Length: 419
Image (cartoon, rainbow, N blue to C red; front, side, top):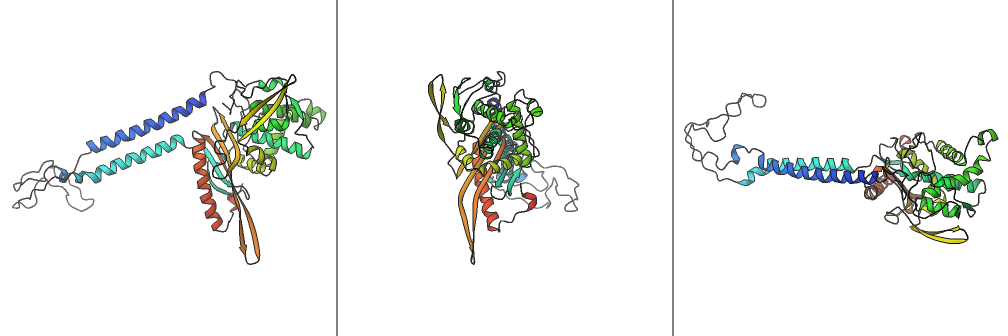
């Protein structure tokens, strides 16, 4: 299910939601199991002799004490038996010691503590993202990563590439984003939900389509952009090549050309919106590659403006009537902890995905007569999460801690850790 719409698949429409709920159920069951194990350990772990109600209760010399075991011939530690069933001094009487329940505490506490450690580990494995990477946007230095090169589906994060190709076309080929275009019938194929309420033939500007794709994550808008711009890109190709491609095919080819230019070597785009249901070949990318793409996109002031909008009203015409719709950004973290973008994504295969940009005021460093200004922006890519906003917020905070440590150490950039 892409955000906000889902692929046209009746059996799997809510599969992503079911998967998330199963993960939460696993968390509850794991926590319950840990508590159960802790209680069992507390009640059932056998106590040592010194923890019984009496130690020997005025034991007569030579009387076996309760719970005594036969001599164990173990010499590994002391070179002689370490347990005897009789008192060592045959003539000695043994003083009664009152029972103290605290004698049970150390052993039982260790068992309980261990059970909760296991619980925490299992809970972490049930909620952690499949992959993430935290990057300094200015230099491309990787501050922290987990499975950064693992091929995964990325859902609507694909629309970052779609918008980048459209903006490149507008900048380099003089494309007019205020031009109104018609929404084609093909834009509705594979999409069940239509939150904005588009219909085939509606007229809308390319600029408002960009808002719909980036702020509202609308699939119909992404396809319409690709169809219109792709037709212009195809006209620039040799006629024998252009005749074999649909406008959307030509557009997707440009998306993959951009990926190659950015050294996104483990990425394949197959459509402009990221739907991966009943799609062959399957699209994929990696956390590392999506960080490269996001750095490229965030260098455009226009892109930064689009993805920073919490709300935006768009308009479209239908048979002479004007319709308005207020988009609300699918990124719930926008505006928190310096977060000013970028994009959400979700499909049944991809799980919950999120890319965040967090910005701080530039740091000014003066050394002698030299003043250096360091822009400060982090990019976080999170793929395959079940709690993307919770994990994303935590990783952004961690990212700034790592950035501060890196900056304090002189911003040394190991070439092996650069995008």
